[in-house]
Image (cartoon, rainbow, N blue to C red; front, side, top):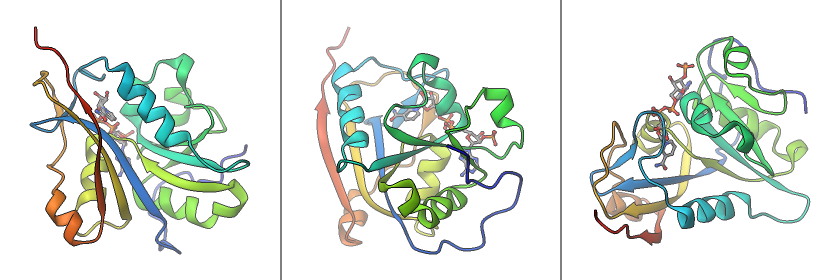
Length: 196
Ligand SMILES: NC(=O)c1ccc[n+]([C@@H]2O[C@H](COP(=O)([O-])OP(=O)(O)OC[C@H]3O[C@@H](n4cnc5c(N)ncnc54)[C@H](OP(=O)(O)O)[C@@H]3O)[C@@H](O)[C@H]2O)c1
């Protein structure tokens, strides 16, 4: 598929429709999500959950997954683009496609607003059902901020009940705030990892 995403700099003018997005994140109790450019843990059940929740849609439709450049780079090459989903990579770099070897069927956007805007305007032509933001930290923080330019309607949060060493953290997801704001925060899975 040819990339409809604008390349180059600048932000999209306005988001035509506030396309609701879901966040999918696994975090420790201190909100650590990554270490040395990878996940700090190996949780096959959580990977299966991630695949299922981001892939499930009606026949003939597809979901989109938006991710930062480093999250794209953290996916083993044989697994990317994430299959059956429209992949969108965020980067401010104009040559990210060449540098990271991003194929044509993956969209590149220079901001979260631009990504959501492009997806909203091409929703029908792309057969889109849901849009998921799958990391990393800056994009999560932007989406969770009270002034966020996007509408988060669901947070799929996997809590990892062991303090793995992390070097990437997200701001705490304020479940009370999201509940009050009418957002849905679901602890969809409780991943318990044996210590030691
Ligand atoms: N536990 C989880 O659920 C989870 C999920 C995802 C990732 N991770 C982990 O988190 C780490 C990667 O996350 P990270 O926060 O370091 O990096 P990241 O967000 O994946 O990538 C950062 C880069 O993405 C681009 N970017 C991010 N937000 C942007 C925006 N709003 N507009 C334009 N460009 C944007 C920028 O690229 P340019 O520099 O090219 O402009 C930025 O330098 C890895 O360790 C990964 O394994 C964990």
